[in-house]
Image (cartoon, rainbow, N blue to C red; front, side, top):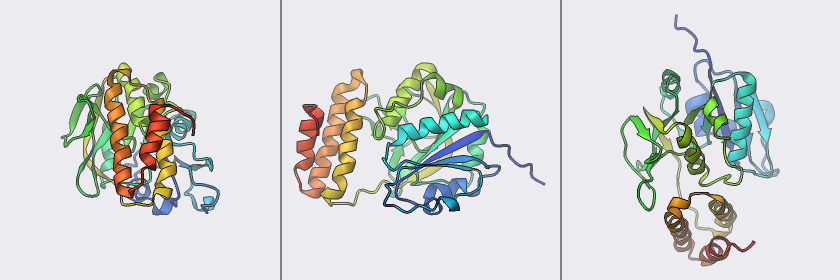
Length: 276
C-alpha cells in the first residue's frame, strides 16, 4: 500500500471568469494531487460573473475580489494563509496551465532545494514560453533542459513556481504596484538577492497563450492594466529593454486590431506618464 503524501505545499490559484472545475490547472494538477487537502482560490471575476462558491472542494479557502486587484495581492494573501496553516512552500498558479501527471510528485521530490523550483513551459503551439533569457536587451523565451540556473540570467513565469515560504517572506512578497504583467519579473528580482538560483524540473507544462482576439474594445482594458504595471516596474539597469518590450507589445496590438489607440495610450500613459 502506497504511503499518503503529507501536504507541505500550499497552492494558490487565481481565477478570472472561469469556474474552478473548468480550469486546466485544477483539472491537470490539483484535482488528483496526492495528499492535497488545502489550497486557495482567489477569484478576480467581476460581480456579473456567476461563480458557485458552494461547489468548491472541501479544504479550499475561497476569496472573491470583484475589483480584480490582480495577481500580486492574491499571491501575498495566499502566502499569509500558508503561514497560518503551517505549510513550508507556496505554489503559485493561474487557471490556464496544463500540467503533466507527475508534476505534483516532482515538486514534492525537490522540497529540499532551498530556492524556487518551476516546470519547463511551452505554449499550446509548442513554442518555448518559460524560462526566459534576461541577459540581452530584451528578454526571450528559450528552450531549456532540467537543472539549476541563475536568476541573474533567467526568469520564469508566475504560474507553476513553488517558493519556500521563508524566502517569500524575506523578500516582502509580491509588489502590489506591479500587480499583473511584470509581477513575476519584479518578484524574482527580489528573490535573486536572497537566493540567486532556481531549479527547473524535469516536467513540461503547457500555457494557454493565445492572441487571437482582434476586438480593440475587449483588449483595451487589459492593455491599460498592462501599462499600469509596466509603469511601476523597477529595473533601472534595463530601462531601454523594458521600454522596447512595452513598445513592441503596443505595436503588436495596433497591427492586430488595426487601431492606433494602443500606440496613443503607450505614448500618453507610458512615455509621458499622463493620467488616464
